[in-house]
Amino acid sequence: MNAHRLHVTSKRRRDVYLKRMMLVFTALILVLGISVFYGTRLVDAHDRTDYTNTADHKYYKSIQIVSGDTLWNIAEEYMNENYDSVTEYIDELKKINGLTSDDIQEGQFITIAYFDTDSR
Image 1: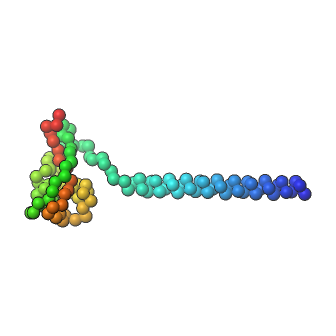
Image 2: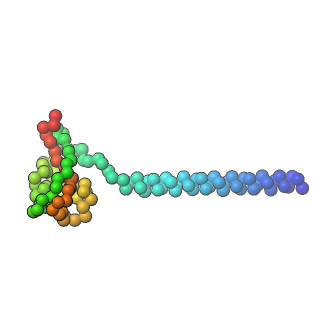
Image 3: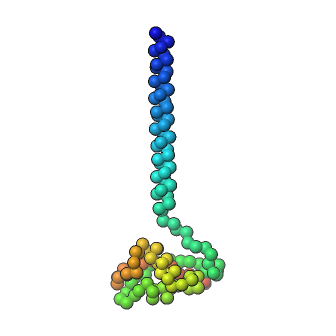
């Protein structure tokens, strides 16, 4: 009878141990999955590095929108040959500033990217 009780106790301990290990394993998998999911959603601060002129250095600055400003005329003023088109530059401006449309308002501040070839 005593051997039977030891066997039952041993089996119960083994079952509790296995359940705890499964819980820990499941928690680790869940944490890993959440980390991967949210990690891919973080802002990517890396810009393209295949610049036409490697002596150019990319900078950012904030400008205030004045009456009559559009993303198009801002792009024409600040972009250079490192961009393939005005549309590419506008897309970057929208991405940098979290804009979902081309609408900008007077008094609004936006961050613009520009290249400076004289920084060396």
